[in-house]
Length: 79
Length: 222
Ligand SMILES: [Zn+2]
Image 1 (cartoon, each protein chain N blue to C red):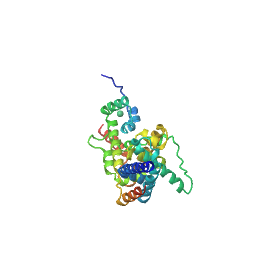
Image 2 (image 1 turned 60 degrees about the vertical axis):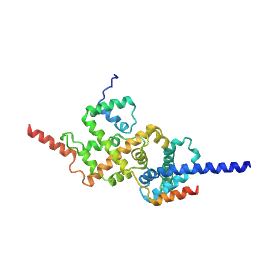
Image 3 (image 1 turned 90 degrees about the vertical axis):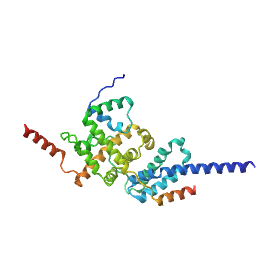
Image 4 (image 1 turned 135 degrees about the horizontal axis):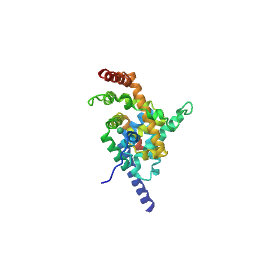
């Protein structure tokens, strides 16, 4: 079994956003996940940032009105 | 006759070309419009921006080498169109006095740190309660308040889900720049939410005062 380096809170927080963006390499990701499992404060922080990110995504969702869809289709029809 | 045949073939490929282009554009319309809304902040301009983007995309469709990259490619056209429209419309030239390198104070701002109360019992979670109280409108306002440079990366990442690598391609900047703009944008966004929440009375007491309360409580018991 591969040993995972243990990291502290400071290191964990430094990489947290990249982790939530799924931009962390697998070694770093394992270190961070292990830290989050044992550290209540970083766990709560991760949950918080994750929820905020989800809420932002939901808030950014827009439905195109019928008028824009028609406008774009007319536009495309002329190409 | 040969020339006629060629013409027919050409017409057929162009029709194919057009219908696959249309299919892709219509499939992405909600996303393009959503991003446009947060960039220009109103419906009419957002609709114009999307229409302009689609027209430009059609004209320059040959510049798309890999059809797999259609989504980042058309978002690049959207953001470029937005940026150049802003320049055209600006009465004075863009005087955003932001350096690329974020100051520690700005990136370090954390809503969580402001809200989290480590002395509370496990079932109490003020930071989650805070998020639950936030309305879509509050989040929109906070995004809209961001300076353009940072608003673009927050929109591309948090709203549209592009990877750092894709954003670097869309904005034609190094990945490191994407990271630092995103860190700064998110710090500013959290600060704006915090400010807004205080104004709207979503936060009853500051962390500082509650900490004092708990410390006092502890001392009393000693
Ligand atoms: Zn920790």
